[in-house]
Image (cartoon, rainbow, N blue to C red):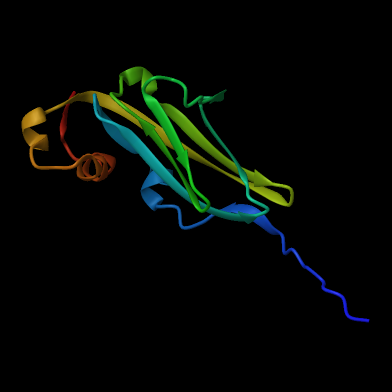
Amino acid sequence: MISNLTFFISVPAKIVDLPQRYLDGLQICKGDAIMIRVPYKGRPAPRITWSVDGEVIEPSRRKVEIKTHPHHSTLLVHDTEKKDSGVYKFVVENSVGSDTVNIPVHVIGKSHPQDHRGLSLYDVFLVSSFNSPLCSL
């Protein structure tokens, strides 16, 4: 008698290869975008939750986008204001485990448009996240 056996290997949900700058905290110029990309793994496919200061972020908010793919999730907050500052929490969970990261974000000053010429949103994000003086306080 021959039978087919199927095995499903479960892998606990886990955040992987998180950039250190997220843990150090991000400084974003007022009016610029917050972009946080968190890589993760897990099987069965994990559930993802984003929150800020304890309040779950709903992507239906006009200036918020959440894009989740099989191995990473990206939070994008457009046209930031100082009230967008806070501790952004990312939770990944499945039936065999969960993981969490808290990312402090501070929206400061106003951006200097002349300093941003020729830079993509990604370039500005990277420069802003390293506390470069692209903002006026």
